[in-house]
Image (cartoon, rainbow, N blue to C red; front, side, top):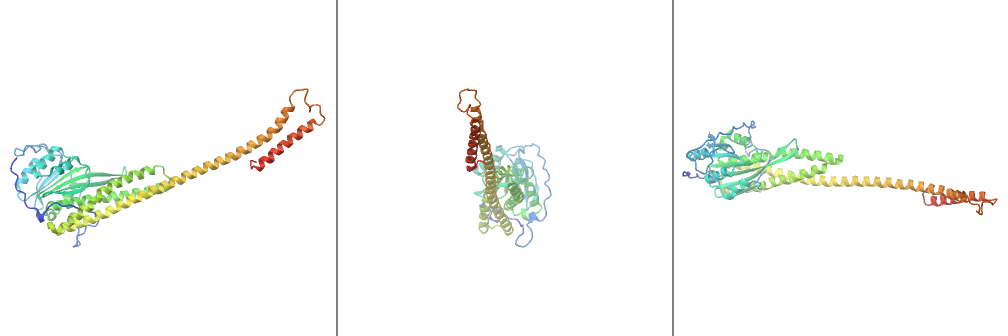
Length: 405
């Protein structure tokens, strides 16, 4: 491998440190909007996939094709000076630029590409391993003069009404920024375009790029918060309307809020750690304003997410109460219907017993036997009729007292 040029001392005493953030109004202390927010960024222009190429002076460990490189560019004094097609070309040109900065964007890179970057920029093996495996919690770690940041970006999908999370790994060194994206969010091409339109910010170096990326990730939370708020409003309506499918929707949204909390909560601590190092590392005053603004937004977003989760817990409790009340009402209605049925059966049974008594007497006297005491008795017929009347009257009185009739 060719000899690497000596790394220049970081601007503003740049060294890695830990931190997190949240905010909404992007206004600096001077009252003007942040440089990368003065004008809305136009839609990103699709970047054509670079054609495979090779470099004769590239180290053997470096890939010869563009692979998963989304975009790579070299900057000097805040202005882009070149856009190499491959990592090998990027490494070579960075060595040739005594005061340049490389900004390399990767999407789901291969192991070979990451190992090539690690060899070129002295990236720590643990950080490289995290970037390969993904599925890391948001964190900020410092390895020598390189800062490794893991961020969890989010976007709201309108059609399925769900939150999609992506993972972003950022390596920040004295003269380079490497982003490794796992997922669709965030749109870093828009961040790059806004920074290139503000060379006075970009010339502050890799630290400014990191803050711009943090700002973009946090801004991406705003549409998610709005979408979740709409979902919660709809869920409340469905709960009181008695929609049977609302419980599943509450559960799924609650799980998304748990993941959203995991994305926002660590950012608060990370950004406050960065702010604590302002004086120690001589961070530019303008960047200090931006970072404080981002930290405010992260804090606000984190509080909103906590509120959403609590609201969903309350809604789930209310829904369970309403379902229980509905079940109790149905059970009561069934019990009342059963009681009414029992009353009708009692009446039918009572009248059946009353009618059975004369039938029994008549049946006995209707048997064809010659030797029955009452057959030749003058009062036999009146006695039979009287017996029927007495039995029926007695049964009627008994059933009436028992409220069967």
